[in-house]
Length: 94
Image (tube, rainbow, N blue to C red; front, side, top):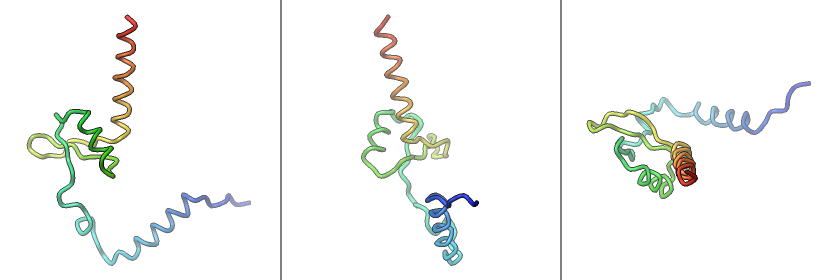
């Protein structure tokens, strides 16, 4: 009669249980003080290399003043690479 609880729900409940024991900690207590960031002018190839060589799946992007302007993800890099490949293939057919 009731739907089976899947592993996603089980994981959510476990995380919720763990987080209920944070003893009043806030984000500032656990965040990275000096995160890896890239500039908006960083070469896409360099960002791809960083993402592959580190455990990170996303990197904050900052402007020249150090202000956060976005996030670059592994998915963003893969999509960009596919667009470049398709454009290159299209141009080689002309």
